[in-house]
Length: 322
Image (tube, rainbow, N blue to C red):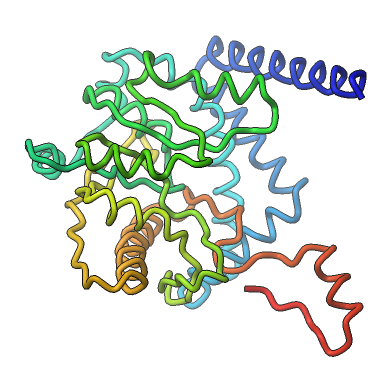
């Protein structure tokens, strides 16, 4: 058992060193070369990972199938993989930008909305983001504007990589990262105490909980925890998105504050707030659909092989994708 564990740790450590090596290489070579490598890796993933390719095409078909051709959907799916490849490169490079570089590379819009949300008061701020565009540049925006915020992250299985990713916040960026298990009560209290919390609020929810929203005209399960944070944390909601422009710069937009109209009915309020969030996410994706994170099924999951085998063994049962 110890030998197996030690071997696994050795493999994890070697993988960590490999990632650090690639980081140094991608930060040393010219940016155009690094991003071209990211696009190439994205194209390779589009060809070599059919399950994720099918998920992207399925999501785009649900979202845009009534508006766009099959050729447009497949082309946009491929471009989204290229975007993810560049996003991986940017993760390393952006962390090393100084203030002058951020001022040169990031175009800001919506400072009035930001200033209004930052007015003094007994409220926290929920900085609403999503898996759209360049969320690493959004973190750079936070650093550039001198904001301090909390961020919930899911750890990766590799303990060395997980520790490294979590240590990238704090002193370096003004971002304090927390693991995603058991921290919701603390984050709610932090919002009530006037802190700022950033979330990627478009994560898929559990269909069994019954929190569905209209998303591109199709019901989609929403993760109600983000609405819960906003409601229970008594926070002001400040949407922020960042996307890559054609000229190589980045566009960061602070949108108008989302005002909550609560009824007092718990489930109704969770659905209503979740819908407000998804209305914003859909608006962003329509700006640059090729910069969406389409590789994970938003509307329905692919049935697992194990579950399908269990249902196949039960007479009269069929697999239903939620």
